[in-house]
Length: 179
Image 1 (cartoon, rainbow, N blue to C red):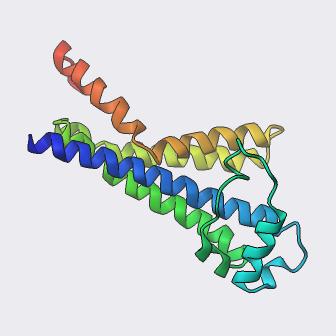
Image 2: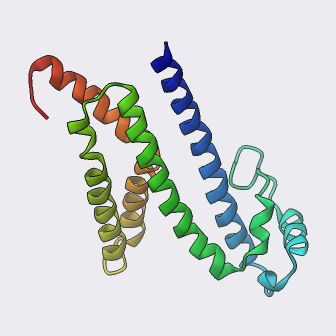
């Protein structure tokens, strides 16, 4: 019973973290995108920035990007700080979901000798995503490469790794294969 509660709490924490992460990233991008449309926007006070964003908001009821309330404390940052914050948020959530995936796999009784590879998987996939991102600047397909890089990073900022490793470890265990 204790492990079921732990598992439920970890899943709930992952869901809440995922929603907050999405709201935070969309708010940052929205402020950067909309703010860049107004000359001098990032020189305004936080309240003036928020007022301008709300006045300029497009009515798109089924488009979450346009139909959400931005996070108010983000208006204290200028465009350079917001751009740097995007990277910091990505780094934080990569580490956060590495921890959550590790805890989920432990709660699901995945052997430690398999779990110990998780940081390596993260490191390799982050390196691949960054390589794709850098190579995108020199390729003829920068948007496609960026999209692929972003999808890899997005998967690592979720419980997808645990959702792949847990059944794979169960299948390997039942079939006698050593991972």
